[in-house]
Length: 76
Image 1 (cartoon, rainbow, N blue to C red):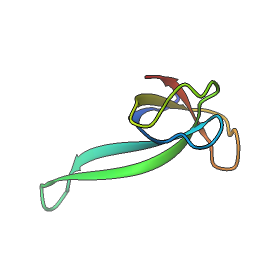
Image 2 (cartoon, rainbow, N blue to C red):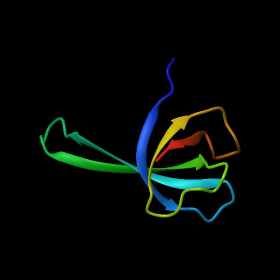
Image 3 (cartoon, one colour):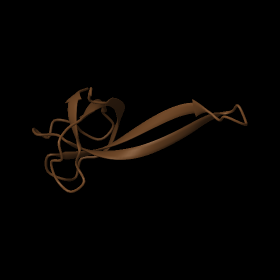
């Protein structure tokens, strides 16, 4: 099964080797036919601490790195 890749914005880089990425998705409501924006935060592994708050990054699924980290940053 291919690994999912998401794109989002870094909202926190306070922890060592970890960034918090806000991913927003848009979809049309099935009944109201209105475009809805939903967002979710993912904690991703950033081995070299290269990304800072405000950077746009792509994250990819990976094996669990810690209790909350199941994603890793692949590019900006």
